[in-house]
Length: 93
Image (tube, rainbow, N blue to C red; front, side, top):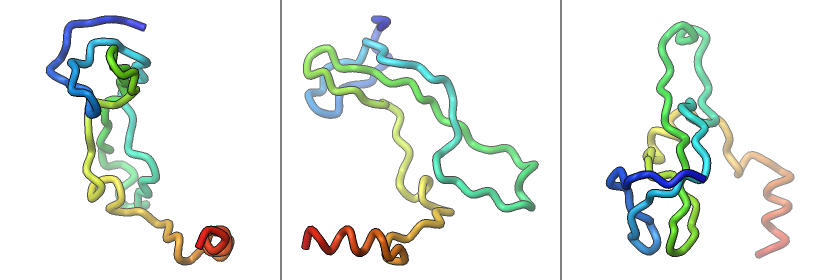
């Protein structure tokens, strides 16, 4: 792990400054993004996957946050359409 000066990020749980890198995987596109054939040559947005571990409470977290509307804009999975998922969920109700 690498200790670095705080970049202004704070732990979401205890609010301590985040300085300790847990893993830095560079930039990555959003998960579960389905790109239409007509848009395959268009640039795709990439976001940092640089995770930190809080030195006080040990919570590992990504300080960068992408809103749900951006993540699930083109999301093609609906749990209510999956018979196996519905059967699984019924065992807990």
